[in-house]
Length: 320
Image (cartoon, rainbow, N blue to C red; front, top):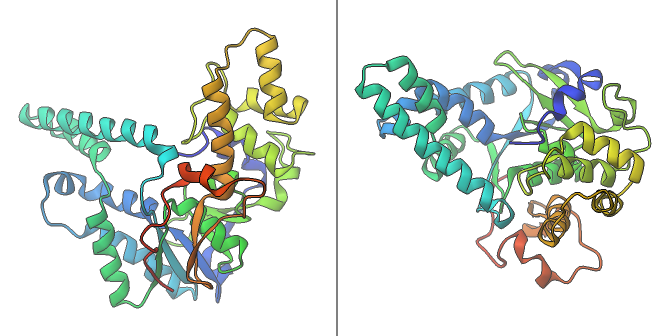
């Protein structure tokens, strides 16, 4: 999940923050990251279909903690499957099934510790789990929105359109999306670290002085993301060096080809689609109560954007 290795390289601009500093503000929450954390303590029960509410309790405890400090949470859920992510989802599904099989084998052999570890890797946050949490949110009158597709794009839209002051997540993809203010590693006491997009130019470990948002985005895609695997041997530091020198992915690819690196037409086409997916993914606008693009695509025929997801579709579910 996210851009591999990005967050540690941005450590110099990450600042400690306590959630009470956002008293009176709306904050978007990456709900599935909370559900995944909460599910770790009850993964065996969830995998076996046994009744449990520990994962729901985990989320509601954090909701109540935010409210205790005067913060107004909006919990954001992932929606429908995004076509650009289908390969990644297939791999994750296969990994969960393999870990479930290993867990059952360890359990039958009496190795409960190894079984527990595999159950944690096998647990799936299904739509029914999300539904259970939504019912709890309704009972407590907590705002939420189910994105048309990915929560990342939805939360970025809410932040850019000033519906929320910040986003709480563990996902570095939000930086590639251009989210202005993100709180990472928030614990149960409300302590975390804060990322601000405006400070990127001052980062030390990865010199981003002079980088435009498009350069940053293309660097992230080059290094490998959920929408496109990286070329062999292409990590974040190499992608950074190439973007710093050549300024655009077209120039980088031209350079790589000239130096004998195999870059297929399929990769080049997929790269362009990945850029469009980060920039123009479909989101829900709570003002117009309609489905819109994260940013309006210019000079792109709408029919060419079908890879962003089918349209029309069921309107996003919300309680804002």
